[in-house]
Length: 311
Image (cartoon, rainbow, N blue to C red; front, side, top):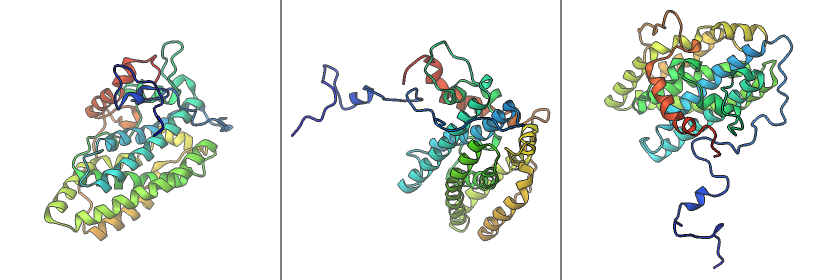
């Protein structure tokens, strides 16, 4: 049999040693190609680069944080098929986040954290791993801990129904990069919504315990729901410039889809008030629940410990 080893063994050789050779990457990477390489990233006429970058951070942070929460399910889902499905949804969102954070950096480099001279960390990783919670612009729905499987399914349903409607509009953005990202993401989000919708129906009409858990999860998440449709000043500005979407205009269409799922499942909308902000400021303003800082501490620890490292 031919020798298929790619390196010479030594005294410490073991089954995992190949992972440390060549282009191995762990928590984050420095050898990836620029995700926007070859793409025209010119900011459209009449658009404020800082506003465009902040808008991309909003959508990118939504995807990044929820991706991290869903990744926590890896090896913990009820069975292998759902384990793979949740991991794939997390990877889809991570891909969206990477493109959106890269677009933010290309639009306004002043928002990218500064690292030691010569650091190989690409801009999108700097934005992901070297901002604290006050600089994250995600809605609070995505940051709270995952809860049980029923609550996770409910969150995916709420988030993907809203985000799919948003990205269907964003596919017509004057910004070519955002339009391309949205067009690709629409296919992914359609699957996310349908996967969650089927499971929501199954759990609602299954056992007494599955229904109880589903209703409890819906009650936990519902106070965060209206925040998705509140228009931040940056969202309004970018929508008026033709590059973003005003989320307030999505409410009617999203409600139609969500109400169909709820009706088929025999579930009523919870009669719960929305979660208040801090002096009126919420996730889009960098005001979050305390759990986000703990999640970011875990997610960012390796990158921050070795800001000049090659991965």
